[in-house]
Image (cartoon, rainbow, N blue to C red):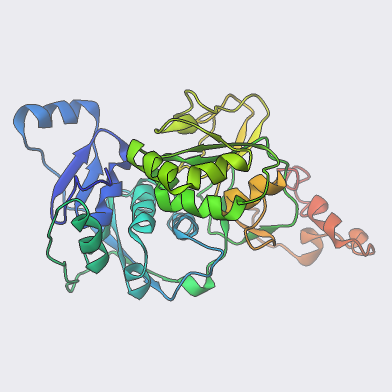
Length: 358
């Protein structure tokens, strides 16, 4: 889908929910069901209700430890799993213009994760240069005055490495911080979200000359990407670090093969979904993160920030009611200790003893 098949201004449909990926080229691209697709094949046409649009204005530049995956996990956490239902996410601003095509594809790929119909970028110089590789000469799309149903400003310079926690961890805004993480049984890098050459190259750069501490599976998104990674030496560096490289495709993302988790296993994945039972049997847990986070975590064998610090989690918000005082947040009997790390074990204990373990 990222090899010159979709062009700016086109209407593109696919029988996969992540067909919205191609909005990165300035096309209106969305997923449809199998029955709808059969009708389109038969008649050559279909219909859509024009969606309202959420403008996500990206400003500034990403810190070195962050990438597009951190942006989209932050945005999805802010909008919520159904906050974009039958709407389009339009990425604008100087921050959007500075993103690579691989980064734009990642952002549009996960538009569906908040219910959106599609994700969109305006075709610009980056789009022209990318599509020129496949023999296309295109016109730039100039932003026009538009009416939005919502505007969401995002300052990329404030971005931090972000995780989505198991399961379906997009229901609340990011900002939950933790200092300890469970050990990992597996790290998976790949899929239509983060299996492009730029992703593999970034991963290889971080693990170069080192050795991973847990089972690590790397799967290129396509044959062309795999061939380029092989010719450039990127795959050799990944293999030298102790990773297993699989044939191009989805891998364990859809929970069928090539790295599906076993009972009770914990994994970090660069895929787009961590719904319960999607990538493993009941009891398995999988976090979502960026390629850099996956690389840092693979080297340590536990969830680790690429900048070596604590992680910001995008996960479920818990409603605990009103009339909450500081003694309910953490009871005074626990304040005598100098080891403040134990506070997390007893947070809201007198209100709900099950909350901290959850």
